Length: 161
Ligand SMILES: [Zn+2]
Image 1 (tube, protein in one colour):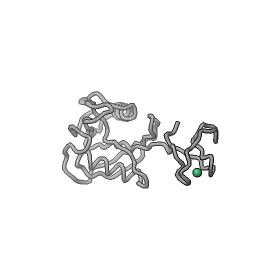
Image 2 (cartoon, helix red, strand yellow):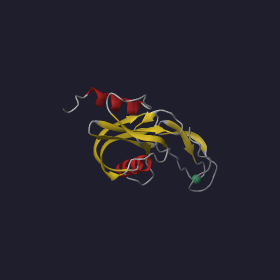
Image 3 (cartoon, helix red, strand yellow):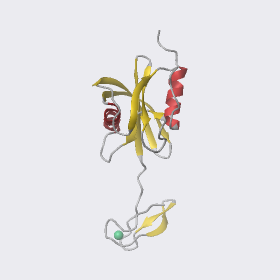
Image 4 (spheres, protein in one colour):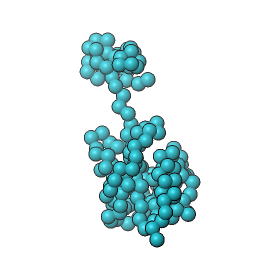
């Protein structure tokens, strides 16, 4: 249930009532109903020469495991822009989103994009203890079901020879 205590329209203390099939905060004075927006995250599968770009997570959750560069989409931000921003912040690489891989629900909505490198220099930035390329054979323990699915599908592909 939401933690919305006071009405954003009139400041009255909210009550909890059923509206649109769920118990939601409702203002007893003006009738305003508060809806919690779902959280949206992006994860980015960056591949280059049969290698995938992973970051070692410096923070919880899943600290100490490797994952795709990922983060939350800001309000008002295009998810593709968020994807390119997160990769740059975490790895120092400029990328361009090339396609949508999947949208999955993992407590938050995760949009998974594929992207290619267009510039920059690899280093470990925000949230990342390390950032590096892995071949299919080298892939370490992976955090998050979304990343595990994408990596498993990639590892099942035949490498280009
Ligand atoms: Zn109100």
